[in-house]
Length: 315
Image (cartoon, rainbow, N blue to C red; front, side, top):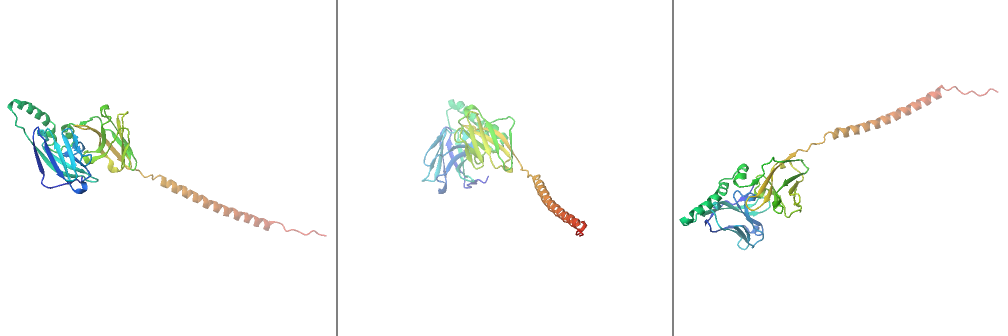
């Protein structure tokens, strides 16, 4: 995807189970007022854990908090109540036009040393988390496995196909549960990484436009509609309507099929034939007029030459 990832030595931040860890990522001065975010590998849209709102203001979300300190040209992320399953690869991201900038970091969470009396409780808690999160970060899964491993609520109904013509437009509809009426809705192309999100809603019942895309969350219909204008053949493919929620996002798979525009070849011969017929009629009219005129002159000539000569009266 053309992501500009820094290739320096990967920083490793260590913490203890149940404690906290602070991750620091520096950036260039040109990104001071850009949006910064923190995501877990492979950093798809729903892998983003937290993002900044404004510079020098702390933003908190669940166990995570983030701060963009302008003077230090650094973003700090704090994770509280660490779990063993938090160990893995993460990225500090800078949201910019074109390709985002990523700084790779690693988090290592050590097991807390506890009394034997509390061991069963801790172990049980660890096992609960490891069944989902550890498997999800073992590798970059394909979509078929990611739907299971990441706990994504993906609808398994027949995938709807929306068809359009090159140069035209297409409108995609996705329904959702009434509990998601006022959640942020977004539209992304597979595999739906953070940089694959094409457009997202701002508020319910308000149209948001961005380039060729527009999106509307209609609360009364429990439906999100996305319109794509100036369709291209390359727009054909798999997309997702996503509902942003804490934990696992809900994704609805759709497909778009763009047909090649057919040139209207039948209109060319008709136009040519019509023009040719008109020209032929004009020529025929001129020739007919000339022939008629010649015949009139010929008849007059014959009439004059065949008429008997006039005789003077005899006196």
